[in-house]
Amino acid sequence: MTRKPEAPDQPLRRGWTTGACATAATKAALTALLTGDFADPVTITLPKGEQPSFALARQERLADGGCMASVIKDAGDDPDVTHLAEIRATVRRLPVGSGIVFKAGPGVGTVTKPGLPLAVGEPAINPVPRRLMSEVVAELTSAHGVAGDIEIEISVPTGAELATQTWNPRLGILGGISILGTTGIVNPFSCSAWIASIHRGIDVIRAAGLSHAAACTGSTTETAVQQRYGLPDFAFIDMGDFVGGTLKYLRHHPLEKLTLAGGFGKFCKLADGFLDLHSGRSQVNHDHLAETVQQLGGDIALVDKVRGANTALEVLELTQAARLDIANPLAAQAQKVALEACDRAVDIEVLIYDRKGGLVGHAGFAKP
Image (cartoon, rainbow, N blue to C red):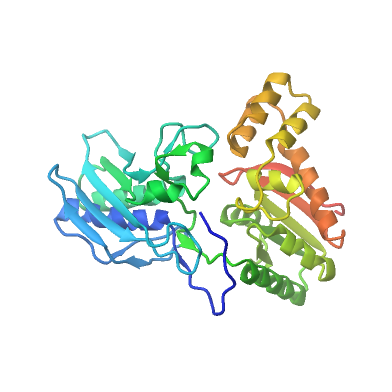
């Protein structure tokens, strides 16, 4: 959900995801539901252990017995369309045995097409924010000795308007924005600053004399590669979407071996020749994926389904269901593009992961 960034003239300030804000609002509202008092400020624990505090923008006890609290999203210096949006959470008790139920309030989208990490009909509250909010419910209800059967309704008053500036309508997420975030933290999106940090990371790795480094698109793939190889922390290049900025620098500042790791959707774009994987500057080419499926022996029905798929995730699910391996050939195609981008100055392997961090595609190093 980003606009075109401008070059910064000072250090950039990070911010918080909609998922982190929704979690904070949920904790404040649930505290009031259980104790009668809103937590303000409210402190939450993010996936990597950081514990930020959030001031409440609004708090209200509802006539139906529920409680509502809200937080204003601060995206820092990231050019994010949801910056300063009000993220509201309304919590209500449910009958014993209901569990935790997520509901899309006004301004939060609903999934209407397959291929996303959420089922059709579900509110567009992504898995990590759901987990964070569920952990808050478990923590507070356990502490107060009550059942953890809670409805969590997330709403964003300006969400429907903001969603028109995102890819949500094209993806079939209707009615508002998505509640996103895998780390809870928004790192400022500056192309020049980010690429400069990539270059500095490569310089550090070279200076340390490491023979093997890894460039990853995000935290999920970085964790998976760390588990696979046990590399030191500084061996990881926070590449993000800037594959080109990474590989072109390696032409003249080479490393011996580089593990290039990313999600299936992003590396579908790399396999198709794109070196900038950001959704605003490159898109998954379903015709290319359909051609690959056809070359692999997929039947006409599968080829047509892939060509008309909503997302890359749906393509992966379709081919897996048909027992057709598309990820390994795509890894080989991505490896070829990467090797050409760095003028073959580096021995590169490509690892493609699914959303859960499972390895689905691999193109190995040329040298043992």
